[in-house]
Image (cartoon, helix red, strand yellow):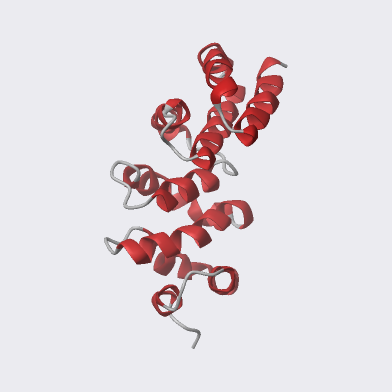
Length: 172
């Protein structure tokens, strides 16, 4: 039998380990439960190392994460590590957000977007998620566009570049 995900994450934090977990889930999708238990774990190292494969799942196999959307949102209340926030948002920026949690996710992402103490990646993923929701609900554009305009000039080069792209998309 393949290694447990616990053994993999305890062996170190690497792209090789992330790829091994993703390959195992590709072969046996039900193993996502094993990964998500680590992602939601109280053990800082386990949740941090599980976060990277979770981040890639949103891009490669978003349908597997749909049942975990609400627990992932709850997990952001008191995240154990920035990796949890960053990879949760990375996942969501590839996914269609279920209607019942669109509002709470939009609100959470707006807070991250406006929090200049957050890591740039967290703020950029938040901007994209908010933009995606604003494309679905055009009335949100009136709230989002001025915020992006206010924060863009003070962000990193990458943040400013993403802000420019999102503003173009939102104004179409």
